[in-house]
Amino acid sequence: MIEPLRFKHELERALGLIAELDSLSPVATLPEFLHEKFQELRSLDSPDCALEVEDEIWETWTTHDDADLADRMQHAIAAISQQAWGDAEAVLNDLIRDVPQWPEAWNKRAQLYRLIERDVESVTDIQRTLRLEPRHFGALKELGQICIRHDEPETALFAFDAALRVNPHLENIRSTAESLRVQVRATMN
Image 1 (cartoon, helix red, strand yellow):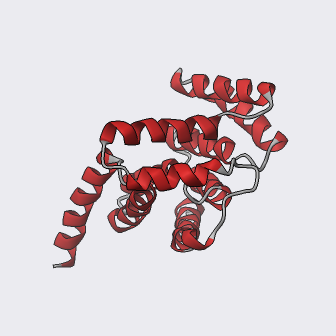
Image 2: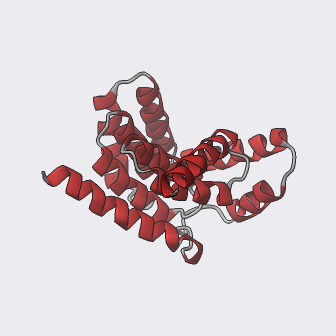
């Protein structure tokens, strides 16, 4: 079967990319202040303050200076939440065609593809997201969730640990990573 082989190939490429994330720079179209927000996020002790900064990061990722593009992104987000998969995909395909340097367009389509179990395409879009925004903890989380679905606990743990290095306040991911760590250790013994 080609699909499992293609999935493995794309997963290996994603793992290689994660190993290089620290050497990659965000695309120049992202606002400079995001760097400060990520530093602040890593230094905060208060979960409430961290959530506030995380929300600011997501707001920055999902908005655009062009009002039409911002509206289209909000339409895609609403379509995903309403499970209007075809509508969401059409809008996201158009956004990617029109603004290929917008990391969140790729990330939202990766999320959509994960939700409808088009995992090879999701992993491919996650790679594109991370090349444009290597700090994208949401994309890393998506990758980890796909790996769990494919019974790849070590790979999921690698993705989740990378997400936690960027945003140490992802408590659900931390909990899942700890469970995976126990599972991986158990299979090694």
